Image 1 (tube, rainbow, N blue to C red):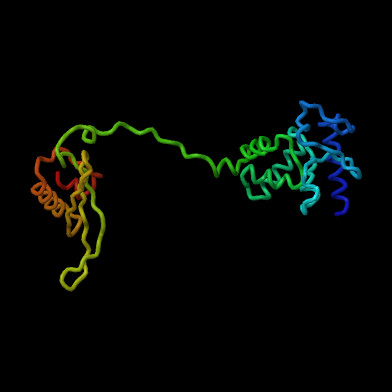
Image 2 (image 1 turned 60 degrees about the vertical axis):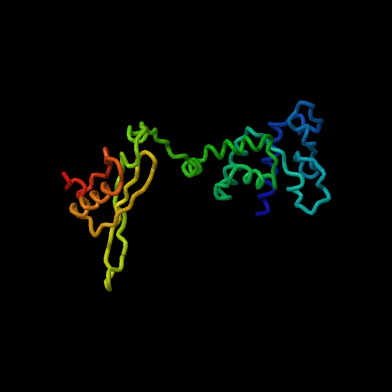
Length: 227
């Protein structure tokens, strides 16, 4: 594997000569050049353009202190970003860029990495937002003025285990909710038969003042039996 660093250095030199011909020949970057703020210098033994800075005395690795300069628009850069993104288990753009900068410095690197992450099919599937549903109009019973329990919605919940004398039996609860003020009324029922529901409904109507005009339910068999 001793040939790998040499081959990598040759490839980097080829990419730099095509992207930065002025700087690769040893000339100082122009003021409007994207490399001017990076203070680049040529490495003596390899001739690679590296990022300058004030980290030369730190205990970091040489590649991390002075990463190799690479252009944004190059096939090699795209392959490196893709490989780093997959190696880090599809990490977010800033994490991928942090790992890349331990070795190379991509000009406008964040925008390049973001673009590659957006093109990743796995990330697009995992981060896709569910489609929103357009809500329909509210029923008239919900938005008109009236007395409490004038319009109700009802359903059963349970079963609950209730101790009756010495035995434990199942019981259900019929819940009535007011469609206007969201008040709640509960009635205990012994089973889910139609007769139990009729008795439950009669107790509810006799307890609450004012007539019940509308009842909304899920069209269960015990509800349909009241017809």
